[in-house]
Image 1 (cartoon, one colour):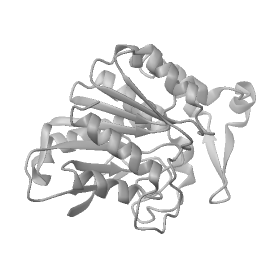
Image 2: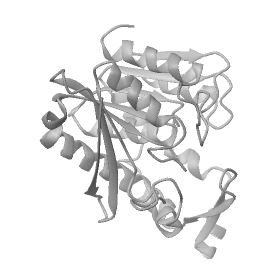
Image 3: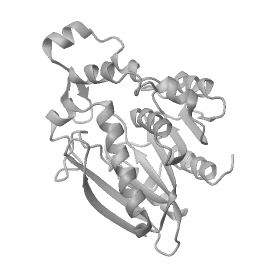
Length: 279
C-alpha cells in the first residue's frame, strides 16, 4: 500500500494538505475524494484506517484538509490557525474541492487512478459540500454522503444575526480541545451572497448520478430526518440507515486502535458495494 502526502494551493492561497492512499499493482482504479466536516480534518480519529480500507478494495482514496479548516500544514492535527477557521465559508470549501478535483484529473494516473471515475464521500458538513459539488461539476460520477447536513441555512438557525453582525463574530466551543473557535460574520454574508450556489435542497433534487445516503439512528449532531429529507428530495438516491450508529459511526479522536469501529466498517462495506455498482 502506498501513501503519498502533498500540498497544493487552495482557493484563497492557503495550503490544502492532501494524502493519497492506493495499491500500486492495479491500474485505473476509481478515485474517491473524502470531504471532512465542520471542526474536522483529514487525519481525524480513524480516517487513516478508512483510507486503508478503501484502498485495500481497489480504490484510490484521497483525503484532504479544506484550506481554512484551522489546521496548518505544520500542525495538521491541531487547530492552530483560529483566524483561518473564523474566515472559512462554504464557497471556500466548494472551490477548494474543485482544486483537488483539478489536481486529480491532471495527476491521478500517477497514483494508478482512473480520472474518468471520480467519486465523492462527504461527512457531516462535508456531505453538504459534496452534494453541491456533485451538482455543479460533471467530473463527479458517484456520490456517498455520511451523516450529511441537509441545508446550509440550518447553520444559521437560532443565531441572532443582528447581534452577530454588530459583534463581528460568535464562538463555537470545541469540547474535545476546549477551544472557543470564532465564526466571523463573513460566513453569513458569504451564504447570502451565494445563496443560489449554496442551495443544498435544490442541488439534491437535481443530482442525477448514483447517490448513497448513509445515516445512523443515534446521530445527536445531525438528526436522522436530515437524511430522510435528502432522500425525499431525490428519490433516485439510496437511503441506508444504520441502527444505533452515532454521528461518527463509532469513531473518535484520537483513535488508538488499529482496527475500525464496527459501525465504520459496516458503512465502508456498504459504500464500497454501492460504488462497485451493487445495491
